Amino acid sequence: MPESTGGAALVRALENHGVNTVFGIPGTHNLEVYAALADSPIRAVLPRHEQGAGYAADGYARVSGRPGVCLTTTGPAILNAAAAAAQAWSDSVPVLFISPGMPLGHPGRGTGLLHEVKDQHAALDAVVAYSHRVTAVGEIPQAVAQAFAAMRTGRPRPVHLEIPLDLLDAVGEAPEISPIEPASTRAPSEAVAAAATRLRAAQRPVLVAGGGSRVASDLLRDLAEVLAAPVVTSANGKGTLDEQHPLSVGAGLHQPSIRALLEDADVVVAVGTELAPSDLWDGPIDVDDKLIRIDIDGAAMLTNANPVERLMGDAPAVLGQLLDALGDLDASDEGARHAETARRALRDDVTAEGALWRPLIDALAPLVDERTIIAGDSTMACYYGLLSGLRVRRPAGFLYPTGGGTLGYGLPAAIGASLTEPGLRIIAVLGDGGMMFTLPELATAATLRLPLPVIVVDNGGYGEIAHEMADRGDPVHSVRLGGVDFPAAARALGCHGRTLLSPAELTAAIAEALTADRPTLLHVRAGGDAPQSHE
Image (cartoon, rainbow, N blue to C red; front, side):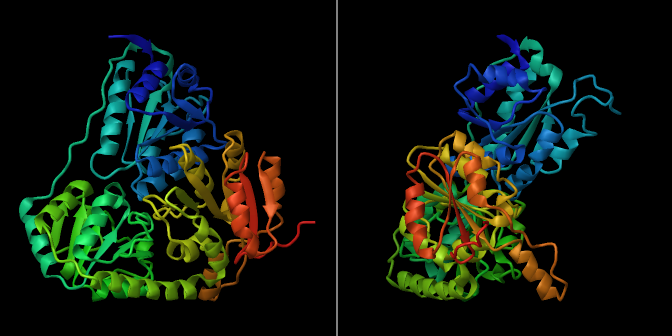
């Protein structure tokens, strides 16, 4: 059994689990890890803030399908990443957060050691699947293997691994532990047969694809085609079925037209979705008596709805079972006509809800192909505009912080997505408020020389909150921003920066930015008009 420092054992364990990219910032207490990374094939990406590191790891995980890794130092550093950890939890994204902790023999009441936190382990344990503190160098490879097994088995969730800072420099025996391969989880055959019977008799079936369906996009398409069933998606399921497919209605479970489609259906098949309030907005849809639910999470099976048929298992296995049970059905053109009618109704919803963002939708639409990913932020331009108004062509084609609703996600998530595979075209879309949360990550993208368009849609402040204040009859205050010359800030951080004078310039500007030698920030007024001059 080889001996190594704890830091080297950690890096070797990550290598053994196929990690090729780590997002993080070196600090006094994790230097032994970075010493090992210097001799490792793992790429160490340096964001400008630990929250940005966490969001980048999240974007990397969603697009690559592999766990992302965020490495910080102790105390304030890992707490800076806690918002990203909470976001990964809410959207079921596998991210491994790694930090040092206080030394093994550190007094429980503390001594005032640098970066000391009252209970760092408990703080992280409150927002991830679990936080584990190792107690020996030899335990590190096992802890990494267990973390990856947890993230790849069942519902994916983030995990935190805490290594006492003295263990990182300590030398000990560290075994080589190979990854645990997850087993395919199939649903009970009786439940599959009962679901197939319902679907054979269905006249108006509808599929709902959530984020958990992304790993089974081909099988989801096959099921839709066998049933001739329209497909709608949650925000995190957007693009699981190519939105140019004749059976794709689109995304946005909150839209009145999609609610009406589900209420009219005689069978609804929900795959990998919580049917969560953060997707539905206006309360639950009463579909219990016709709902077939496919989910890997037993608790989620009964969350927000109680299905008549429960197919518990991982999406690829269960969809395969269901297709086998259905056999060959006589598909008709009625499903495609049904989907087209629903698409037209959804377009009417988008016109009513997202008219202000139509110039942005129209500008992006000609540029979206199977290689394109939109990294969105929790901004009005995304949840009122792009979510339902822009069609994407691939799973994880729209990265969006649904459950947590955090601001500042879009830019670092775009950076993480850009590092997953060559040939992808990533476009970030943020509001002026959210952009200020992670503005320094422009420097990260510039250092990486990413051809990344970063569109800042400027409405002069926190527009959604201003509307909510007004709707309550409250005084509207503390929500106005302004005074930031975003293009100048981008240039100062090593990027190109432009203010667009009209919506007509957007498509050409984005296309040019996708082939530039560095990121390009494109500053537009909400709706596509030019922001006020900063001169």
